[in-house]
Length: 471
Image (tube, rainbow, N blue to C red):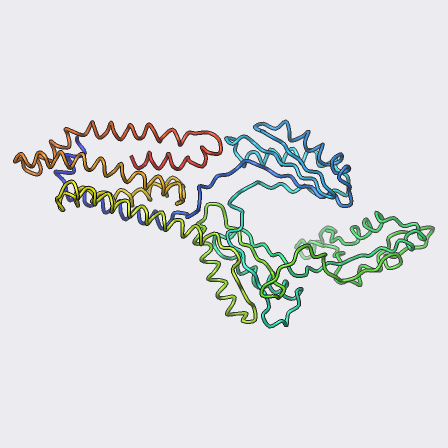
């Protein structure tokens, strides 16, 4: 074998190649995203449309059915499921697994834009979202005022204005969600008796409030050779600006909003409660960017939370859920198992060879090959997860098998009195084809896993690719 003969004649060159492979492998390992499982993107697109004040039947007739007709004929669509409830329509479009989720979302967006004009005027713009498992929160924590001096509204304002921006600036953080506390809301409470007496409908009130709460461009003004853009600020600045607006004008007599309603500066209706040690708390969830290192992002977030705790000593910050902790422990356990597998394999080789030097020579290439695999893994854009580590641990036995066959044949030639160089060359040439055939047999068994279709195929694709890299 030409490769074996080059290795025998040029030991310094091969040693430098191995060292370079180790260095590149360590660099690839440091850059590998760490996750629990491979990044499997399920091609599902959700279209959510809010139609305030509509019954389920109206939502079904006016929103859901037009969307189903428009989206059901898209290319690559497998299923279309919908739910029509009070005020909300949700349509789930499931594409074939081989279909690109990015292209599917674009197709859905185009069809929704085409039928948007047929929706009722009061219906809000549809929200189109892709289902991405990577967008699940990787970390969540509770924030409470341990001194009891802040109200729920003040606590939420502090978290949203001071804590949330600091977390959003962390590299790898895609979104920071805040739940809990009291959220400010301007409430307009209609007086039914006054509305009947003045012949004013709720739709008139809604239209009047929308028409007055606008900031419109009014053109531009040219002065001294410069164009100045003009705007008419008409949005509400304070609560007192809302009461005087005119909602109706009957026979020259204006009807003001304050005549038929009461405007209050209040809070949105509380849908859920969270407590931390008996005190009202705010729950903050962190979502990472797709393809980033879950463990590293979580560590950066926790480091920033430690600084937040020092800057705001009155706040109590307690982790409620940390996905990175489980991923870290699972990954560390897999790596430990991988190392133990290599150690036990070496002990078995030592038991049968009964020669420490031959044993060390046989297993010397194992760590080099394992570390170098991380460079290939990083180059292919894969992640360090349970599936790839499982494939790597299984490949340990294959590498040891090949090394044992070659080394045993070399050792046999040396016992016949041949020099180490002659024994290495002849011994390797004699078993090269047999070792290659054995390796290709294993490849032929595991490589098809990388081409399996369906969800299982996507999940175990990295398993098959890792086997191909290793072999």
